Length: 573
Image (cartoon, rainbow, N blue to C red; front, top):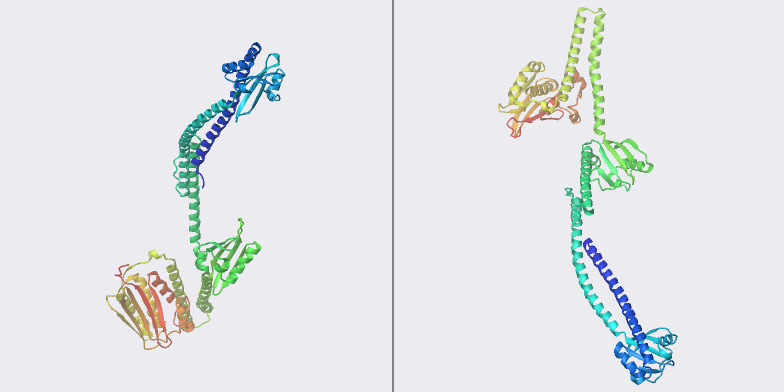
């Protein structure tokens, strides 16, 4: 179990105090015993030297003298002759006249004229002996048991043990208080660090002048800097995410292990959803695309190419990352729509050139002939009629192109949204085209209730109906044809149908019918004065008003153009 800082501080404090007290006790125990023994030696030595004088004076009766001296010095007194025979013993008179071991060290030292000292066990206890020389070669020896010293040392040990217990308890209490005071700022900083880890950087620094206060203020400054840096990183991340999300190009980042670590929405649109976390083989399933990426990873060189994947065209740019661990960044761009737009532009330029070539060539040729002034009046009038017809055709073509250009450039917010009486506009169109319908012997009928009201641009609605009815007159049945303009309210939409009973249109032509300059029968269209732009203009006008246009036709069964707009009283209008 890991100890807290407070527990470690308390344990170290208590251990230090205990160790110091133990060292003091051991030193006192050692020195006190030595000092008491030294004091005992000095006392015995002084008493022995004083008693030695008495031995010289009362040597006739050493046995009695030993007893009296023992009472005076409070120690066992033994008087020995030069051969080690006991002449008198204050504690053991029965040994008088017996010979002791003359080899005792204190006896030998006293015989040499020195003060002899020795400690040995006697009757189960340790006894201290001090011997000094006396007159006539006698030796006076004093002995005292060390049990008194041991008792004194033992009492001292008990008192010290009690004092140690009190000291340890006091040290424990003081250490607990000190550790509590010391751990308080540390606990506050720990809480601050935890709040920082949880994202709360509002740290109030301590005003204490000690080291903990300095550390607290440093931590608060660090939190402020960290918050600022994280704010910058978050802002940079959000900016990068917004850029990647708004890019039309797909961005794919692959790490050194071949795993996708970043993919923007455009990349998932091109390659599929949920790319992050997948391996390269799972993320890029097209073998041709994957081969380019793998080649760049092997060679370490950037690679840029454009690849056809089925019906799609994808531009691919792969660049190895120089960062540690390697990896690749891949940029993909869907080129299919761009290719179609380029193809449409080429076709448009070709069609415009083709459409302009015929009237310009005719005008140029007939005008050059007239300039030669070699034609008669009838031929001149015929040529002028041809030039006029082609000029009108050229003007209609330019006008149609300008109309389309204007419709494409008009912002959606500028579209007019007004109340449109579809029936009234259809009747006006029928009156406008009455003469042309009579020329082609075509009957135009309008079947629209007066309450059918659309939301849109009245001028645009009129142009749409006029173009569709004019097309029906031009390309419907050659004689005795009929064109019907039928309108109705259907839920929250207005549906308008222009129906003819002409030869109809093949299914292969229907998908491209609203393209510029597209003609089902180019020869017949030019013969009848068509520019090939009318249906393209119709589609742009209808879509600019939020409507839709579609066509239904079968060869031999006529053609129906169906236009839908929002009704005027639509709640969402």
